[in-house]
Each structure stands twice: as C-alpha cells, then as structure tokens.
Length: 319
Length: 319
Image (cartoon, rainbow over all chains, first blue to last red; front, top):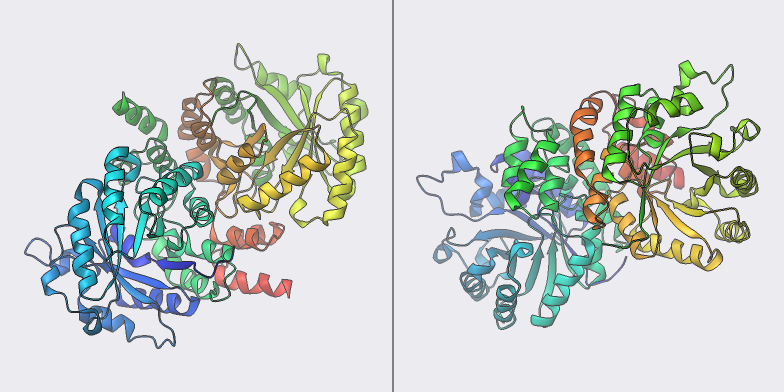
C-alpha cells in the first residue's frame, strides 16, 4: 500500500507508559526517539501532559506523564536528525494546565492530542481550540466510541466538524472490539458527519486485529496511523509499528531501525512487563468491555490464565 | 457474520502436531475432540495418514502421524455426541498407501485432505479421485501458492476444475505472507479458474493476520474455514478457533467448550512448546519465506530474539 498522504504516528512511549506508569529510563526513550527518526516516522508521541500535584508526583507517576519541556528537549537533543518527526503529547480532559503552555515556537513539542470520551466533547474541543491558538497541530481522539450511543456520537461529530482549529479526528478502538467491517462502518459515519476533517486511527490488539484494522482504515481513507514498536501498549497493546511499516510501501520509511530497537531494548523489557494478545484480552475485546477487568485478571498470578472462568464471569455481567 | 453455508474445520491436532511430532497424549486428543463436538465445529482433522516404515515409526513420529483406524476409533468412542463432526485426515503426496484404505463406510474417518504443492497437482488430484472412489469427502490444499508462478497455478486450477471428485479447493497461506487484499486477489483467481468448486481457506499467523485474513476469505465467499484451538500450529500458528467462533454468529456454534479446553489443556501445554506470533515469524511472513529458517532461529536460545540480525540475514538472501 502506497499513498503519499499516509503518515505514521509512533505512540510507543505514551501508550506503553500506561503499563509501567511511565517509568521508562531516559536511555530507553532516547532509543525509541532515535528509531522513530531513523525509520522516517512522521510523528512521535512522548507521553502525557498532566499537571504535577501532591498526589501526582513525578516520582510516583514517571516523567513521561508530565512531559516537562526540559525532559522533551533532553530527548530531542539526544539524536541529530535531518528531518525529525513532529513531537506530540497527549492531553487528558481536566488534567492539563493549558494556561501554563508556551506557544509552539517556544515549545519542544508540536502537536497536542486531546483524548476525550463522547460526553466530554465540548471540553475536548475547547482544549483543541486553545492549543491551536498557541500554534500547535491538534487531534481529538474520541475514546470508546464502540460503547457510545450512536446519536451522541453523531452530535459529537457535528461539533467536531464545526471546529476549524482541529487538524485530525481520530477513530479509537479503545476496547479492541472492532472487526474490519465495523471500522469501515464507523469511518463512514465519521466521513458523513465530519467530512472536512482528516482522519486518524488508533487500534488495540485484543482480538489480533490491530494491524488488520489499521489496514482497513487505510483502505477507508485514513491518513494518520497510530502504531507502537513491538505493539507495546495497555492490555493487548497496539498495532505493531514494524508490521505496519512492512505493509506500507512508501519509500520514506525504513523498518530496520525499529527491529534494531526491538532487539536491543524491547526484548529485555518483555522480561519485566507484559503486553500483547492473550486469551483474556481476546474475550474482553469480543465483549466490547473496558480492559480494566482483563488487566486485573492478568495481574493476578492465580487466575491470569483461567480464560474459561473469565469468559463465564464476564458474560454474566452482560446478562 | 452469519451465513448458513459456513463450516469450520478444527485442525488443532494435525497442524499442532507439526510442532511436537504428533506426541499428544490420548487425553489431550480426547479433550480436543470433545471440545470440537460440544462447540458445534463441522469437521475435525486428527492427524496425517502416513505409511509406517522402519524410518517412520509410531514411536518416533507419534500415532497422529499415522491415524490408524483403532486410534481414531478410540478418540471418537471417547465422547458421545449427537451430531458429531466429520473426521478428517491429511494425505501427503507419496507418503500415503491408498491401496490399504477401507471404503468410507468401513472407516472411522470421513474426509481425505490432500496437501500438495503446485508441481504435484496431478499426483494430488489422483489421490483425490481414488479417495472419492472410496466414498470420502475430499479437499485439495494447494500449499505455498504465494510462492508459485502464476501461470503454473492457473494451470493447476484448470485441472482442479476438471476434477469432479473434488469437494473443496483450499487457498493455503503456507508462509503467512498474505495481506487481506492478496487473499481477495488469489480467491478471485480461484473463482475464475475453478468456478464450480466450493472453497476453503487455511491461514498462518506470521503477521498477526490469520484471523483477519480468514474474515476476508469469508467476505470473498469461502465456506470452509480452518482454525485451531488457541491458534496452535507450526511456527506462528493458525487462525484461533475461539476468535473465529466469536466472530461467526451462526447459532450452531458455542465457544465456551473451546475456552474450557484452552484453560485445562492448552495453558499447561504452552509451558512445554511454543507457537504463535513473534518478531521472527513476522519477518519470515513479510518476506514470503518458507518458515524453516524462522523455526530454526526460534529453536536456538542464543539467537531466538535477535530479530534485527534475522531481518538483515534474510533480506540478504533475497538480494
């Protein structure tokens, strides 16, 4: 698949940080940044931009939950790169201090990605507007749309369409519940109600479909694709960046630096933390459930592989 | 997805046996048979039908490489089932003694699946004819078609079309190389040159696409779908039966017995043998290579995770 408009966003650190509370070593983050640079990825998301507080300390929550300017600069300056990727951070509704942000030309990051649920769309779009006013590229990532009421989602999309400050509208399969035909169906809705917006897609791999659904999104016209090195990410993880770059024929991409990072950095990390498909996440995705119950199950050594018990328990919740 | 013609073939024992030389315990095979019965699967393939010889002994190669009548009966008789699945065995060209076979009505199995490469299509179709003469349902599984020369494949398909004794023609992604668009393209070819044949599809999971490609095959009109419990199978394994049954809405299927078998039988087995996606198989699939190099790499503890080195080495082979 080749299309010159296609762009790839590496969210390895941001989504991967959800499983280790953003406690990556600086060397690890630098390696990921270097791999992103050398592979020709268009955007790299280095974390969240939360407010530090007495409860949310850098020590407990890891520096990439906060993405201070100095930390971002330390990473960006660690590797010279002729045509470096844009740097993105994620905003969570109600947990970002927009007033403390510098304009983009005085800031180390370039893109603000606003994650919000359908009921918070007004707050999300307000953050988008204020970010655009500061010069940032903007996205809105509407989470858990597979569990949203259709009319609410349509109303949200109408508001999105009216927001000139928004650059990218994301379809996010938060629960890893979509089959490819559903990706197509939701994207039809997005294109119908927000026809002027460029689209992005963010998958989860609960049913071994993150990569396949990302391909479907490309076929359906999406031009900004999220992926992570080795598929790292919360729960079942994300679309594997290396598989995606293999699929994309755009000559600007080179997969080799990604495999190098896997060999040197991710293989050891896999000994410490778990991500990726397993039976429990497969059930959770199929049932279109938030992954929290599946993650809790996987964290308990006594029950982590009791998939039949988990299926029965979770199915009864639906009864 | 619901279509009343859709049938599911469980090849857990046959494809899984490729990684442990068919040394499953009788209890394990009985559990798989029971799960297949209770889940409503249409066909279960219990192994290969090779000739015992001094070199190929039951002791060294496992009883499910030979599928003696008594062994098959022992499994079938172990679980009463109102509407039991058809029992299939696989024939390898030149390694089956067709003259020793009983007619179907005196045999414990119902379906003969003939695996062959494109150059062996005459031999394969001869086996199909002789099997049909004995009353068996027949399939031809053309292997490695992703590496076949197109004109040779077309010639083979022409011969397939002329073989009235054949019930199912299989598209087999032996190398796990296909993207969904390629599944569609090959199936178009199959439908063009063998329009009278019912189609089957057999995936491999090298690029995390076995399940997704099986969905694509369904969309493209395939009605006989191979899958294995927990995706067990050579190398990266197969389409996960449990994910497939979740996807299929046909009320005749029940996924719960499959998850029960996973919990009780496959979780312990995973401690002993490896199957499923990993970086090495992903590279092998992307390069459209036979999985033997990837399997050799995975069997060597020193290099099994050196995916960058494997990529460079394998890419140079293509140079």
